[in-house]
Amino acid sequence: DIQMTQSPSSLSASVGDRVTITCRASQSISSYLNWYQQKPGKAPKLLIYAASSLQSGVPSRFSGSGSGTDFTLTISSLQPEDFATYYCQQSYSTPSITFGQGTRLEIK
Amino acid sequence: QLQLQESGSGLVKPSQTLSLTCAVSGGSISSGGYSWSWIRQPPGKGLEWIGYIYHSGSTYYNPSLKSRVTISVDRSKNQFSLKLSSVTAADTAVYYCASYGRMYYFDYWGQGTLVTVSS
Image (cartoon, rainbow over all chains, first blue to last red):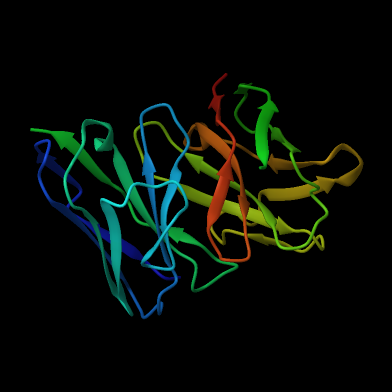
């Protein structure tokens, strides 16, 4: 199984900050990496697919990069509605799918 | 645009079988290009993929759950189902159904349903 490790597990930031979350795969997954945002009591929402493609309707302050084993999700200027938990998910080994453990983004 | 809605028992006794259904609207469950998945999230924890069924009927399950999981499709009702047998308290979670598209991501999700395993 491909293991996905996110860092940090949690972080505190302020509105307007630039934030980067990292996801590392236990083996190369090319660009088969997706990012989701989850708010309390809600289903996850797709933000980024194929490592760097922005899902329709997602604000441009979100961006993704990376390939192989190391990936990043960047929020260029945090907005109040961005405080949530973020998950990466690899689809390289489809049909077997794994998620990262999540990164909780909190207000400082 | 697809809409998914989970339903089923919210309380299951230990050793019994958990059964959930996901009704799909806004599209046919039989159309090519999608597979239909179940994902769960224990309280306060992360996401765990359970398995999915392709439009062809082929199924794939998380190896850690494979011996207890069955996912099936009812095309006449445009819905798919999850059965998880021999449940324990560790199976207590919010269960989500979701669509998995050709681009290999989960694009549409149900709102989730909490299933508690308790006597």
